[in-house]
Image (cartoon, rainbow, N blue to C red; front, side, top):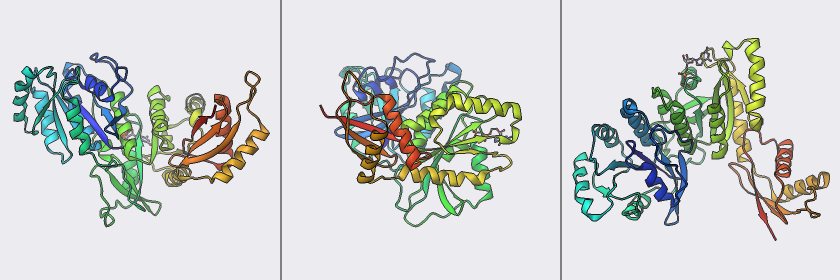
Amino acid sequence: LPVVAIVGRPNVGKSALVNRILGRREAVVEDTPGVTRDRVSYQAEWMNRRFTIVDTGGWEPDARGIDASVAAQAEIAIDLADAVMFVVDSNVGATATDEHVVRLLRKTKKPVYLVANKVDDARLEPQSADLWSLGLGEPHPVSALHGRGVADLLDLVVGKLPAVSAVAKREVGGPRRVAIVGRPNVGKSSLLNKAAGEERVVVNDLAGTTRDPVDEQIELGGKVWRFVDTAGIRRRVHLQQGADFYASLRTSAALEKAEVAVVVLDVTQPISEQDVRIVDLVLESGRALVIAYNKWDLLDDDRRRYLEREIEQNLAHVDWAPRVNISAKTGRHLEKLVPALELALESWDTRIGTGKFNAFLAELVAAHPHPLRGGKQPRILFGTQASSRPPTFVLFTTGFLDPGYRRYIQRRLRELYGFEGTPIVLNMRVRE
Ligand code: GDP
């Protein structure tokens, strides 16, 4: 889906605008300074057009960090969105921080919409006209709180969005798209440098391909791969606070563009909540997954035992993901990354024919029927794979299947068909 990012200083009303666009109040909790929100992207729809909205304001810095963090938000938005909404508080006017961001926004060719918020009634409109001086074109007066002007703004923004996200589109036969994700300092940029340094960096693009300047094409294992959002990895954002929030933001945005994610973990550190959150973001995105355990050169026997236990405790739900134990520093086992990526993508692309899938279901039910529930037994009438990337199955049933039974189906699918490295989506249509 195309991506619209919302950027602006704290308290200008970004969250209110997101709520207004989503048309529901509970989407984003109240704007409390200093509060971290996990969710950064939401599916939105306007005039039958669906798009993803990325709220870059989830982490509100303290006064000292404002410039750095708002600038970081703007950079992320410029790199990864198809359109940017820059929100200014029209009662306050443009501040020094706003002007700092404007300098960044003026450099992009992507559409930037200057949103003058808190124009709660027509009498306030003249003051929003002052914002013409920012050089971002016409200010769009809105009241996110009351909804005033938001419909017109959305008509404009959505009308100019590309049909499919320009950044997510893959040319037929073009390089496959890889996102390297993970917490700060786990070794993402070292991995990228090692991969790019030892192999030939592809300078010339294939004829007719569009290339995002923040991506890098690298030849690995005899094939060209497109690593997305490498600018974001190389241009490291140094922040005292909010680092986890930015990692989530980057991850969500990079996943939008990728087909497969390499989650990099640092084996010298305990597996943290943030590591698990990043893995879960990959699962939610439906992208293929490879897990790279980095800094293997620093691992001793004691830590190694703990590590395996931590993996069992925290990452058992993704035990189907190909695993590589690497050292970005020494180059250890880096050559194993390509087969892991290929395996994950092959699984992600897999299609099972309807006949074969129904034979599988019949066998599975015969071996282990659904437990009785209130004297009745939900039956599976028919199933089909609705799509690949990731493999998505629909089951037509006479009742809701228990979660345990759904897990059983998924387990059997993995046992029989592999599906290593891809999430499997199982949907149900219950016929009364
Ligand atoms: P990023 O924030 O995820 O991009 O992490 P960096 O690539 O900047 O790495 C953070 C630190 O870990 C740097 O000091 C690297 O030199 C170091 N580092 C990265 N990978 C390895 C590795 O495999 N082994 C060792 N010993 N150090 C590593």
